[in-house]
Amino acid sequence: MLKHRGFPGRLPGTDFQFVIRRPNPKGVTPLTKRERYRDRRSVDRKADTAFMAALWAHFGDEPFERGNLDAGRLSWLFGREVLPYDDPFDPESYESLLVINEAVARASFPEAFDENEDWA
Image (cartoon, rainbow, N blue to C red; front, side):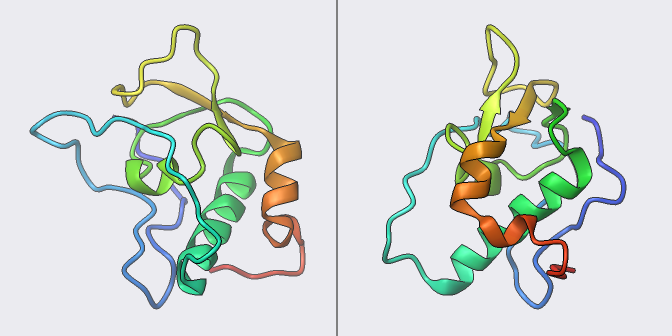
């Protein structure tokens, strides 16, 4: 499992984790598309925005390996802002490649792309 050095571990001041420390001994948690409803708590929306900002700052428009990125947090963006790059895509592999769908991500999280915003 690739560890993304320099990637933030969590949203500061919360328990919203962005990376995992070690592989799950019971098996890899699969990536699934989770529905984001309008009535989500503001702190949940802030965590999504901060995670998207970290993804963009770390990887930009280049494909990236899933590695130690948290499956739960990725699943909130998967299928919309973060897309599979591999064909066929294995949702249960730490080596799977992903890519940011920049147009959708900018529409969904415009503040994540604001250079003046500090998410750390």
